[in-house]
Every structure is written in structure tokens, then in C-alpha cells.
Length: 66
Image (cartoon, rainbow, N blue to C red):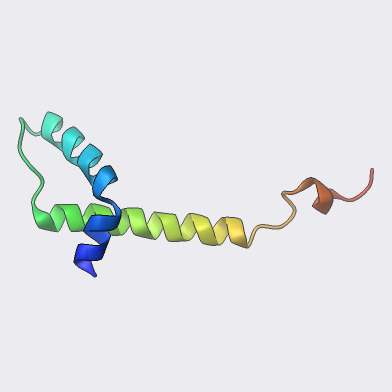
């Protein structure tokens, strides 16, 4: 699972590592930190997908006739 998360979010992790490096004098993120960031990204993605899938009342047709 860890490898899948790292692969799935590899582009975003590259951005995270770039920002991390700038803030920490060029230091690279270790695998534990990368995995943590990937898990946060995955959890956020799942939460937002679920929120939008279950949202009602946000479409014009849900507002009724005025």
C-alpha cells in the first residue's frame, strides 16, 4: 500500500519535497515523511470526493422554481 500511495502521488510529493528542501536548507524528505504526506493527500482526496458525491442542493435543479 505504501508503494501505491507514493506512486499515486509522486508528482505532488515532488512539489512537497521541493518546498521542504527550500525550507530546510536543501534537505530531502525521508520516506516516512513522504508516506505521511501521501496519506494526507489520499485522505483529503477521499474526503472531498465523498463530500461532493453526497452534496445536494448545490445544483440549479435542486433549488426549485422561483
